[in-house]
Image (cartoon, rainbow, N blue to C red; front, side):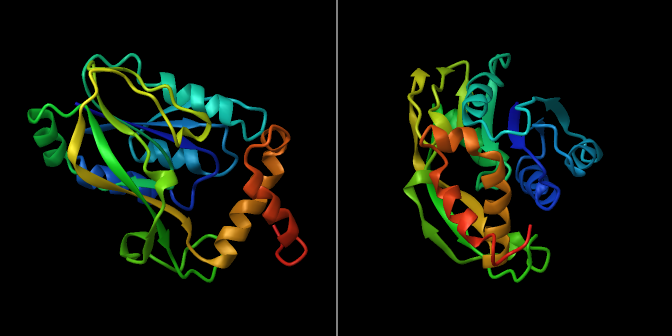
Length: 227
């Protein structure tokens, strides 16, 4: 059994591609979209793609504490099988066959290395490029997350805010092979600025706490790029 949990807020530009990525590699997976009351067509697309949808509400604030709580708990009703917990712009390079082999090897958590994918889009929604054809990337240890694990051997993940760090509890055995987690954020200058500007407007609470501080740079770009 294979369970994938994906956080979502206004991801209509990427959601189909992300779902396709996982469905192609893990045909028997069950995908649940945790949607923060998107105002675009994300939920409709999720239903069209035969995903389960669970709604949560942060009153239009970007609240990483709530995200952390979801990632730590959304899979707790699963009694056995592989679990993947990701954001919409995170694509894990793994196949169903590889997961089956890792299970036979006694692996309970995949060892992962993070990649920042570098695109060359000239638009705000990256509609002029194909994400699956992007080959340029740089290693980013911040995205070497522990996001794929097997239950019931793993009892707790104890993610930090942002889920970049975690302290798993249970019978922890990492895979010998390292698997790539590709992060699709730097898809082009217009795309990145537009994304950061939107998140800046929702991240006041996090910025007050000294988190999500990178969104400050988006504010400086608002006079040059419209929302």
